[in-house]
Amino acid sequence: MLENLKSLTHFNPFKRYHVIKVITPTLKPAKHSHVDKIIALSHRLRDAHVIWQTAENASLTDNAYTTWKFCVLLHKVLRLGPKEVIHDSSDYFSLIQSSSIHWEKQNNLTYYCIAAYWKVLYGRIWFLCNYGNFTNNLDCDASHIDDYGENCRISLLMDIFDYQEHLNGLLFIVLSALDVQSLINSGDSRQTFFLAQALPNAVSDSDTLYGYAYLLVKSLRLQLPPATSADLYTRFSSIYTIVQEIFDQISFMQMNFGNLFDIPKFTTTLCLDIPQVALQEPTAPSLMDC
Image 1 (cartoon, rainbow, N blue to C red):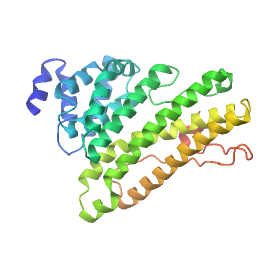
Image 2 (spheres, rainbow, N blue to C red):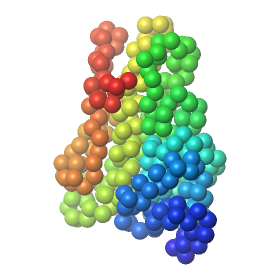
Image 3 (cartoon, rainbow, N blue to C red):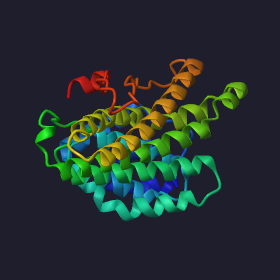
Image 4 (tube, rainbow, N blue to C red):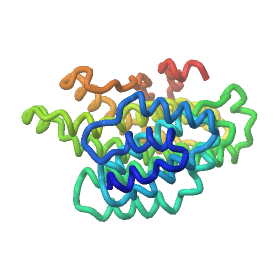
């Protein structure tokens, strides 16, 4: 596989070099300097095809380490790169689906993590292609959310729920694969650090999406029939109660592994009494800027 990767450097060698370095099929995580270079180059070139073509030629079904590293890289580029990387990446939906199906068929928790990550990335690309008013890091101007049509707000809320459920699936399977206590006992932190690379971006996405889901539920609950409003909030509370439980587990993990990886804090709390009790305002700093 290394020979295949090295043979790709004839086209746009500078950018391919950094991609090849990032997805080298080893357990060692990618260096931040290479990832930063790729993101910077994506802004300069306004393009993601070179990233995808390099990974495609390396084969995203042959080596789990290469595929996992590419998923982590792609999530960062989708968050921090230019808008063009979203539309370029949508050209590879069939590749994402085929790779996801391949890894999902393998009887291994790490492989299940890869399949779950592909679903997250597919959902993220689809969401941003369909909601152009959201930036790559899922920010948008929510100050006029009440001006959107009722059907538009319901559709947006459903799509946020769908993407969050993909994120929950990834977070859950990654935490299952880490098997924290077993890793602590063995003293082997390499696999933890490797798989945990997915957590920061997934947590950040979840924290941001919570804010918009909250605003949409709050906006819709007074305008919809009580039964419909209750159904929306039931799904909202069930999804984000799971999110809070997952993040509590991640916080416990960080206490055991110190500064092995830096996870953003999920600081919002749910009020489960709607509509009898008013919703609590979000407290996460990223949401206060909405």
